[in-house]
Length: 333
Image (cartoon, rainbow, N blue to C red; front, side):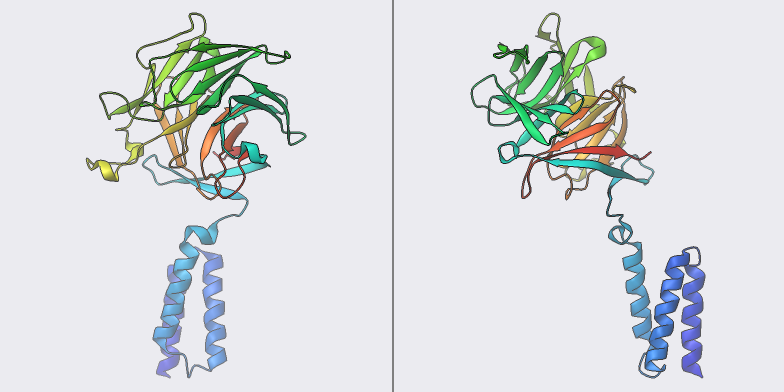
């Protein structure tokens, strides 16, 4: 019975190697036994069975095989190879005129301020009714990237570094002031958030830092003096190991900030990248903590990020083939 001995050896080895994966072992044993029985051990040859077992092994160990459809997996690039998961708690599709949603900031309750990168308008979105309840005009059409709510004022950032202060947003006709900064389209500033602790705005640049490729700056605009510091208050270290190792720049990862927000409890800064979907977390001292690679199918182009007062995380995605959206996200520890 040489044929039987061959199959017995194959099944024994397969079970021994994979015995810690009970479900997988049982699956292989079941399929193998059924195959042997079906063909009465005459037509199935050893190479065929081995090929089948190998194919199952590849499928079983692939990320897509284990993927929970209710979760979006993100890889934690901190050198230890661990994998964590992001759960989308809820999703709101935006109307067509917000397909290119480029900024998001929490107001109160279930209301968010949004901006898109073509119109000089602020859209107040109500997540309870899933609709835009108000539009606030503040300027001419332009490349508007992000906004930040500060009490009854909303600050809007344009791609050329200009800031727009929209006061008394609940008034029939809010007043608007414009401020220039040293940032230009070369730095391509896209991230903006309110730093309540220091009463300032933080602006993260998407483009290159002048004179260096070692970091990208996060700049501060003081809300008392209404002036921006000439030097960045934080520097995103592009040489950090989370972006990869080695001297070959083409093989190294980088970060292109499209949005920034501060966690109301931890004080950590959360930075998203719309060009290569990923999420970077930096502590209050500017030190890199974690880098997550986002699933591009669910986060086609993340452009806005914000927290509510409880620390719930929301991300706005610009529409590509699908409508733009806002998603509430939970990061599993």
